Length: 432
Image 1 (cartoon, rainbow, N blue to C red):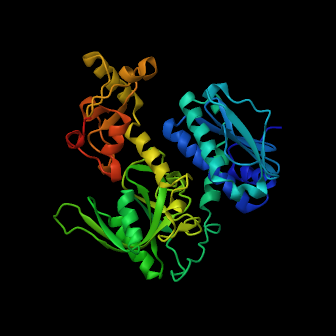
Image 2: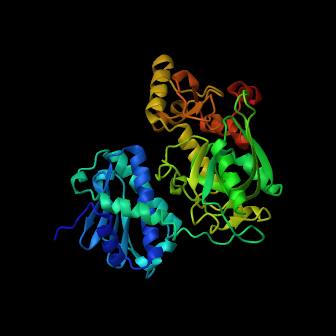
Image 3: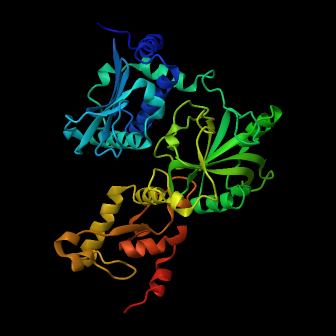
């Protein structure tokens, strides 16, 4: 039986029958929009969502990645997903995987009532598959079956004003939260220092935060706070801190833009969400995964103050757990962002090999091929001489802006969150 795939009211009716609980339905919408945001950042045509009389399916590239059927949602994930199955989360053991993404996969059935509590590891593995699927085929062969009414309904559901009622802030925070928040990026070590020193801090930005100043004035008129969320400037995938803006000092007329922001109540998020969960206020679209600009005005999400936070007095072993968004996780993201243009990295390697015949570290001279033979041939790390985490916008990287280094020297270069000069590290090197 055919369905109207354009009318969002039809989509609302079918999804309401598939998942009667509105909070669970909103959770599924959030997962779907998050997946679309990641796939769309790789290729706008890589995804499509199809409405059936008794179900909904999101396809990315050549494969299905997320489904909703009566009483159950289906997540397709990269294997292995490090969680234990339960009565609400069932692994499909007979699933062999998708050859199209060249990775082993698993299929998980989640009862709809458990959608608001899907483990972060499952979502992480699901989004990993979404990325691989979009990279594998950047034009979905199923676009003819796309149902724009579903996408419209999901966006409306995610931003529904009635469902975006803000919870009361914990402790002595004001009850009201402004419906607009600010997204910004700062170095994680600077944020961490402000957090450990009581949560009050200030910083400057090389642009005029005029809109933020207007929103702060509007928030104060209603007795609300203006939230600000931060991603690590060296790895912007996750939102790692939240705070409230107390004052915005705009630059004087005629002077170079230099805004000073005063904030307080800086809190570290225990389970950092992806920045792609934020919705840009003016466009209603999610922040793309590849977005690295330092300042965006967004809608305040319902989950912002429902997220658990870490106490600065927490023991170190609690802060080092290998969960998404921990410091170790951010180091991994930082590394991937610094080498995000794989074609440029490979071109740098080819250039050095052609000119020198080897890939020797430019600091210590270590050559993986010389020490490991065939296993180390063509292997090295590539370091950005111009730190990307200090850039306020996208940059054009040339081959001369890159350096070949070994893993040890690369770690020392960035030890403590810095980006040391190669000459400095070379001078510190002690030869036996």
